[in-house]
Amino acid sequence: MIGVGRLTLPPYADFLGVTAARDTDGAPLFKLGFSDVVVGRPGFLHGGAIAGLLEIAAIGTVLDALEDEPGTSAKLITVTVDFMRGGRPRDTFAAAKVTRLGARIANVEAFAWQDDREKPIAGARMNVMLRRG
Amino acid sequence: MAESPPPVLAGFDPNAAIRMIVGFGHNGALGARYVGHGGDWVELALDYRTELVGDIASGVLASGPIVALMDMATSISVWIKRGAFQPQATLDLRIDYLRAAIPGRTVVGRGECYRLTRRVAFVRGQAHDGDPADPIAHVAATFMMTDAQ
Image (tube, rainbow over all chains, first blue to last red; front, side):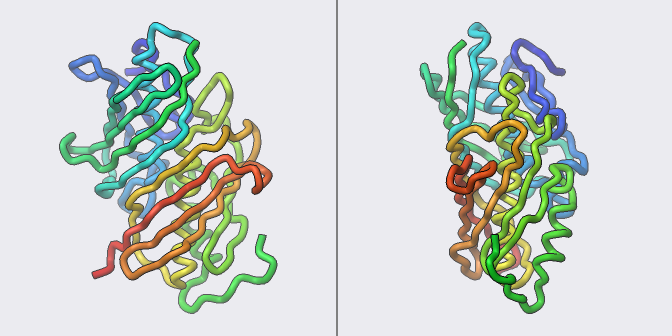
């Protein structure tokens, strides 16, 4: 599932249990498997784990968009997360959209969902600083 | 950080509650530790671990563990200010990264509840990696009381 193009994930993704694939359109798709590592209050996902999944999706999608510029780094400057529904003990998916890819800054939106992509459990808006390789 | 012993809160033992919260699930997996608390704040620490790295080239911690630490610290600050445990859910959380945490250093996160209503708690916090005057991140968040009418 992993290592498609530049969809190589950091150690933190292994810690959380996040893997990457591509959906039928070729867009990066990320999955957080459920485990004790991601539990917040009993029966629900931890907000920090959900934010972690959104971050991995955002950075992964930005680097994927810059696939032909190896050596580029992407660092978060601001992250604003809205938690919309409690995350239940099951797989969680995430995808991100780069709304603007500038020379130095990328604006990214990411969403996480479980059973129904139209019913997100969380969304995030991020400003990402780019250092082009 | 507390100069005087924290106040004793009726019906809520912050020390016992914090020990329980930081040792469970995601918080326990991250390995967060209790540092100190006052009437409306708590400080937690997160030791550097290579498995929490977000950027292999630099060795800098990922954002997620910092968000989790600050979510936890600000959550607990609400219960301390209220003097009772009440179920709550994070409504939104914004984090600004002022600079990258230096690889190898322990991150200390301080969460403070500065306004508490029946249904909503307003919190803020900062994280640093050794010098509180040179923070790595700033957080503003809100919580909703899930049991409030």
